[in-house]
Length: 115
Length: 114
Image (cartoon, rainbow over all chains, first blue to last red; front, side):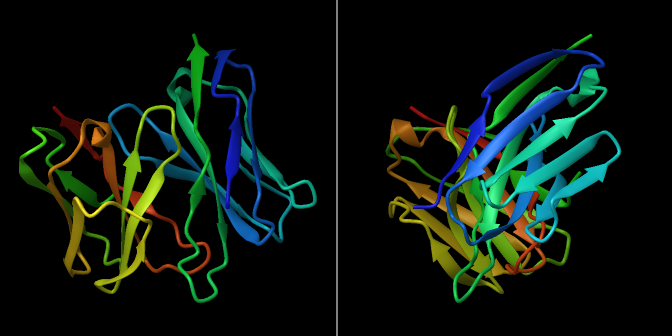
């Protein structure tokens, strides 16, 4: 079945360093890849997304890259700050074609940014 | 604030109790979702409603019963739950179910089954 693998499960970096989280997906029909950030006591919040017709997208300190051939995508956070500490989830979705096109989530990465 | 509210935020219930979780969205969205979030596991989609009609039931046990009276409200009725049902239950909404529609999540209800 559809599956999304996310690594690492935990990541600790020093403030100012970069952080990279990687995901692979199994469904080659997936064409939408969002990243969510979940802070303690809150629900996940979309921070960036990418569609399959684009290889890279950047928004200030965060960027996402997509390699469709290898079926993997990555989240890059530069100049990390303590407020970036949270759990990050990747997800993949195929275009609905008579079905709901549901999001398949990765297992999550707990990022800790040390001051 | 994402525009999606959930009540209660915390719930402790016995295995023989009946309780309900409530979700309300103030975004004018047409699709609403229930997810289960357990420790060390990916978010699991439970149910999807689009324009008040259920479009997805992800093989969820019948002890979980959803209800969607209108596009703004979603309930999850619980009865005779098991301890393994203890988890964070998240509600989400989106403008539609098509490609690329962002899902907005509520803060969740932390459920403990004793």
